[in-house]
Length: 124
Image (tube, rainbow, N blue to C red):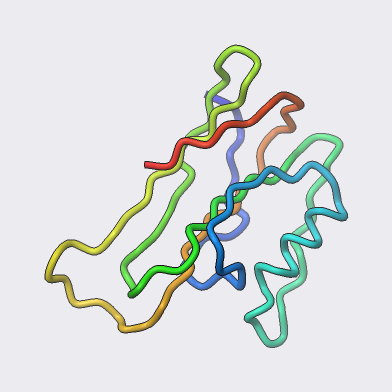
Protein backbone atom coordinates (compact mmCIF):
# COMPACT_ATOMS: atom_id res chain seq x y z
CA UNK A 1 0.00 0.00 0.00
CA UNK A 2 1.28 3.42 -0.93
CA UNK A 3 1.33 5.79 2.06
CA UNK A 4 -0.81 8.86 2.66
CA UNK A 5 -3.72 8.96 0.26
CA UNK A 6 -5.56 12.21 1.08
CA UNK A 7 -8.81 13.33 -0.57
CA UNK A 8 -8.68 16.82 -2.08
CA UNK A 9 -12.17 16.68 -3.60
CA UNK A 10 -14.85 14.04 -4.19
CA UNK A 11 -18.37 14.36 -5.53
CA UNK A 12 -20.64 14.14 -8.55
CA UNK A 13 -20.50 17.54 -10.26
CA UNK A 14 -17.08 18.04 -11.86
CA UNK A 15 -16.74 20.65 -14.59
CA UNK A 16 -14.79 18.01 -16.56
CA UNK A 17 -17.40 16.15 -18.56
CA UNK A 18 -15.26 13.53 -20.30
CA UNK A 19 -13.85 10.41 -18.60
CA UNK A 20 -10.28 11.03 -17.44
CA UNK A 21 -7.65 9.41 -15.26
CA UNK A 22 -4.59 11.55 -14.68
CA UNK A 23 -1.50 12.11 -12.57
CA UNK A 24 -0.28 15.66 -11.95
CA UNK A 25 3.29 16.32 -10.83
CA UNK A 26 3.66 20.09 -11.35
CA UNK A 27 1.95 23.32 -10.34
CA UNK A 28 0.98 24.51 -13.85
CA UNK A 29 -0.73 21.21 -14.75
CA UNK A 30 -2.46 21.19 -11.36
CA UNK A 31 -3.91 24.66 -11.93
CA UNK A 32 -5.08 23.64 -15.43
CA UNK A 33 -6.81 20.52 -14.10
CA UNK A 34 -8.37 22.39 -11.16
CA UNK A 35 -9.57 25.26 -13.36
CA UNK A 36 -11.34 22.79 -15.66
CA UNK A 37 -12.74 20.86 -12.67
CA UNK A 38 -14.31 23.98 -11.07
CA UNK A 39 -15.38 25.58 -14.37
CA UNK A 40 -19.01 24.87 -13.40
CA UNK A 41 -18.74 26.85 -10.13
CA UNK A 42 -19.47 30.54 -9.68
CA UNK A 43 -17.24 31.74 -8.16
CA UNK A 44 -14.79 28.85 -8.62
CA UNK A 45 -12.96 27.52 -5.57
CA UNK A 46 -9.21 28.23 -5.46
CA UNK A 47 -6.93 25.28 -6.12
CA UNK A 48 -5.79 23.62 -2.90
CA UNK A 49 -2.06 23.96 -2.23
CA UNK A 50 0.10 20.99 -3.17
CA UNK A 51 3.84 20.69 -2.49
CA UNK A 52 4.95 19.03 -5.72
CA UNK A 53 8.46 18.44 -4.38
CA UNK A 54 6.93 15.80 -2.06
CA UNK A 55 3.46 15.09 -3.44
CA UNK A 56 1.47 14.51 -6.59
CA UNK A 57 -2.22 14.63 -7.49
CA UNK A 58 -4.20 11.70 -8.87
CA UNK A 59 -7.65 12.23 -10.36
CA UNK A 60 -10.31 9.82 -11.59
CA UNK A 61 -13.24 11.45 -13.38
CA UNK A 62 -16.00 9.21 -14.74
CA UNK A 63 -17.57 11.59 -17.23
CA UNK A 64 -21.33 11.91 -17.69
CA UNK A 65 -23.72 9.61 -15.86
CA UNK A 66 -27.48 9.72 -16.53
CA UNK A 67 -28.65 10.29 -12.92
CA UNK A 68 -27.66 10.73 -9.31
CA UNK A 69 -26.39 7.78 -7.32
CA UNK A 70 -23.18 7.28 -9.30
CA UNK A 71 -19.77 7.73 -7.74
CA UNK A 72 -16.10 6.85 -7.74
CA UNK A 73 -13.55 6.48 -4.94
CA UNK A 74 -9.83 5.87 -5.17
CA UNK A 75 -9.53 3.32 -2.40
CA UNK A 76 -5.88 2.29 -2.50
CA UNK A 77 -2.51 2.71 -4.16
CA UNK A 78 -0.08 -0.19 -4.51
CA UNK A 79 3.41 -0.44 -5.93
CA UNK A 80 3.86 -3.35 -8.32
CA UNK A 81 7.39 -3.58 -9.65
CA UNK A 82 8.26 -0.07 -10.84
CA UNK A 83 4.60 0.90 -11.41
CA UNK A 84 2.14 2.62 -9.10
CA UNK A 85 -1.28 0.98 -9.33
CA UNK A 86 -4.28 3.24 -8.63
CA UNK A 87 -7.32 1.21 -7.58
CA UNK A 88 -10.72 2.91 -7.79
CA UNK A 89 -14.23 1.62 -7.18
CA UNK A 90 -17.28 2.94 -9.00
CA UNK A 91 -20.79 2.81 -7.62
CA UNK A 92 -24.12 2.92 -9.42
CA UNK A 93 -27.66 3.04 -8.10
CA UNK A 94 -29.32 -0.37 -7.82
CA UNK A 95 -32.02 -1.23 -10.37
CA UNK A 96 -35.27 0.50 -9.50
CA UNK A 97 -33.63 2.97 -7.12
CA UNK A 98 -35.10 6.44 -6.91
CA UNK A 99 -32.42 8.91 -8.02
CA UNK A 100 -32.21 12.53 -9.04
CA UNK A 101 -32.96 13.12 -12.71
CA UNK A 102 -29.84 15.12 -13.42
CA UNK A 103 -26.70 14.28 -15.34
CA UNK A 104 -23.80 13.83 -12.92
CA UNK A 105 -20.03 13.88 -13.41
CA UNK A 106 -18.52 11.80 -10.56
CA UNK A 107 -14.91 12.42 -9.53
CA UNK A 108 -12.29 11.74 -6.88
CA UNK A 109 -9.11 13.82 -6.65
CA UNK A 110 -6.40 12.86 -4.16
CA UNK A 111 -2.99 14.01 -2.96
CA UNK A 112 -0.36 11.31 -2.45
CA UNK A 113 3.34 10.96 -1.84
CA UNK A 114 5.26 11.67 -5.05
CA UNK A 115 6.03 8.64 -7.20
CA UNK A 116 8.26 9.09 -10.25
CA UNK A 117 7.49 5.88 -12.12
CA UNK A 118 4.62 4.93 -14.44
CA UNK A 119 1.08 4.95 -13.04
CA UNK A 120 -1.63 2.49 -14.05
CA UNK A 121 -5.33 2.80 -13.25
CA UNK A 122 -7.66 -0.06 -12.33
CA UNK A 123 -11.28 1.15 -12.27
CA UNK A 124 -13.84 -1.40 -11.07
